[in-house]
Picture 1 (cartoon, helix red, strand yellow):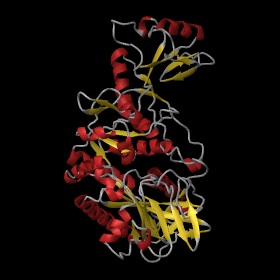
Picture 2 (cartoon, rainbow, N blue to C red):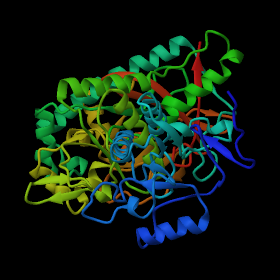
Picture 3 (cartoon, rainbow, N blue to C red):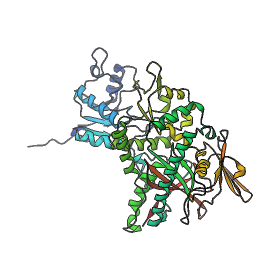
Picture 4 (cartoon, rainbow, N blue to C red):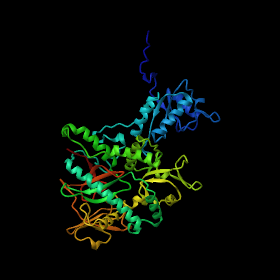
Length: 513
């Protein structure tokens, strides 16, 4: 059998050979006719087709195929505007039904502002589509820097305002120290749950500056045993004595991707240098998947909308990662920006961009912000389930600290704390009830005052006895110990130039042996 050589200056993909390297799209044209003229003028042989934006199958309206002949030009259906693997795969299967097209361009977007791809979703969808007979051309990101090895998992915010992910150093623990941290984390969580029950039963909401409009919502979520996904305890500990609780990030904890994914990849890269016994207190990824499975099987959370502020790069990265863990657990997990959530007065329901009712919502958006939003109080009119549940407002509040001290006075894991300044003797830390990332925290020690700027404080303060934050070569380190469900799941460490850990801190990996 003779073979015919392809023309010079050609390229081949999926067994098809083309002369032109130009590919044109179907967007931004006033009409299909204009699109066809542009194609002819360009000499392109491939046209990408935004399946969700052009008419391929409705004969009652102008159709793209009437102007651009798919027998003469290669149609490359794409998934523009898709933010989940499920959306993208459904779109491409519809395209195959419409025109029997199997060569496709897959793009699963992760950020609406930059249109960067969600590589976790992209890779997952690629594997499924390939097995389903598609020939997939992928819109993807590159990963040129070794220090940013986890960008394909949504870790795209590693260098906000300077270096954030820092693997120039690491922290070394003993196995016994890790066991102590794990035990302390479990004990703290059990104490916090008892504190939540106390706050709700005694109705101590005013002390926590929780608006009265939320009280019934909190009681209802607690009485109905609405489940939690995760949280993060911030601890001060140098390995001597018990760790001390600084605060509990119970509602919208950050540093998840770096704790779960980034430092694990770091360990895999350096393990040969550390020794075969090197390990890491980090089961976050597996624990999250198992918790989603439990939420689905025991609570019916099989379809969950995920939301955060649309232009928040950090929250978007964390949200994409959480969505991936949910998807791996078999949960349908569409993404929607919090600004895009609508309200249907007729149905008394929150709805997405397709006007579909939102039955369950996972939010990386603080409860106090949600309740202050225009439609926030409509939550009380719905049966929408929310993760984290409303009762978490009692724990995601610095008012938890003095209440814990009341319930467990002189407990070795706690620092003395009070709503009243005069009850905390000696050096102390002044913390706004709702402060995040160290904002408006003030440290008073030895006549010195260390302050962090911010916009919090009007809601009130608590006062906590000062404890030194361990310092190594001028870097103050705080341990973030994660809880998933009701079980400890790993730690992450952040360094800062001051004893107040702020959003300018650096994340540093760890290991133990």
